[in-house]
Length: 130
Image (cartoon, rainbow, N blue to C red; front, side, top):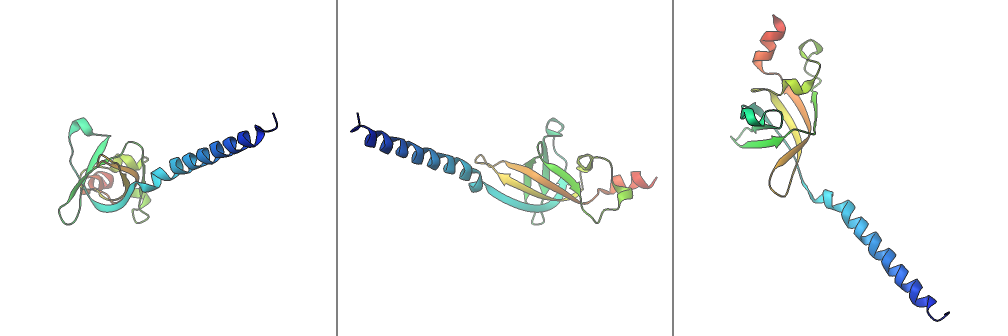
């Protein structure tokens, strides 16, 4: 019975090492996701995608579709309180200038984690002033 104990100890030690390695890999996998920050103007999407996706047109004419379902939307400090609405997400409309922090998934989809509204659409400004 005593002769088996070193083998049991070695086997449990190997299982512990393997478990620790697997946990470490599982923790590191999200670190390999492609993260990006891009800025641009919100352009009109389809009605079917409203509330789920927005399209961002960048300066060189690039277009990105961004999943916005689980992100934080906030106003830039340069937007006066008088021009803000209760929910910043309501201001994610066509012509709003935004800065998006997002992760690109394996399938190429951008998923926003944070959206900063830099400039409100002109239509919203007119509504606020009247």
